[in-house]
Image (cartoon, rainbow, N blue to C red):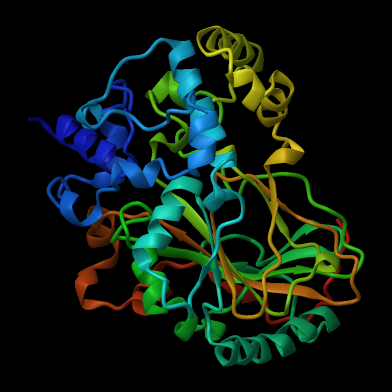
Length: 415
């Protein structure tokens, strides 16, 4: 068995679906690296078929057409499909997500005796979204908020320069997202080690179904919206790894056939109510990543898929499908989550989401961190012997921190 066959087998074990055989060797190297061929443990990490297919009994009986779960004896082999067959598969994955209670309303309470890392990884694998209640010690969050509050107010007043750069050589560290809404890369001195090195967080992220053992911190900082900030447009934090428009055509892979590559974590610095404009998620939208190249063609193949499975129309109308292709989200796919102090939300960069309008009198603020899948090769080549470094030490070497200029200048919040 050559490397490509081994890595295809491993990819199918992680995803538990039939990945197209057109996936290229160079693409697989991005995920596994040359010396990770034998690292994957089916016994420890393989998602059982029933975990991928976990939906309510009533829904299963009433919707027998929903079969995103493949036969176990086929799960280790990529197959070639006609375009309408491929489109049907992605649509069924999407429909499965928007009817799965774990994706629509599921959340885990860290303080519950029923909490488990395995359960968290299962939910992530299906939904690319994970809500963890009571995850952080509130005193740790309070300490972090106290440390950064003065910096934010000094930034607004001009005592700290709003101009600067980042350790990634960006020519800014404050980014105006919209009027009254901005992101802030924090300097390394505010790095919340007790939050970023939380052992449960790292164990979840290190699961192969999430990011894998060789994860890295990309950046961290604050997302801020002032009273009166308007609702955001639906967006992703980044496009699909192989391109948002032609990944299936050019690389033979799209949607949930590829594991998560980058993840955003958000922990609010106050209790988020409806008036604060909680983050809304477009459930299932990650299923269509890499398919957005030719809308007319995709709608044609969707109609062809309907000919194969007419009942799809009752689950996903052509109007809803077209909205998704236009980077919009049908209302039936919305999920709005009001996070409290100590709660955490994790979502895939590929999942569409938006912040609601801030109709409160509060400064809505949250800690964010972005993590990415890495490889042993990358780490060894660029960061030395990583097994001798803890997560914080590795993060300080490669994460994206803000560096304010020394000359003071007041922050302006208009685009």
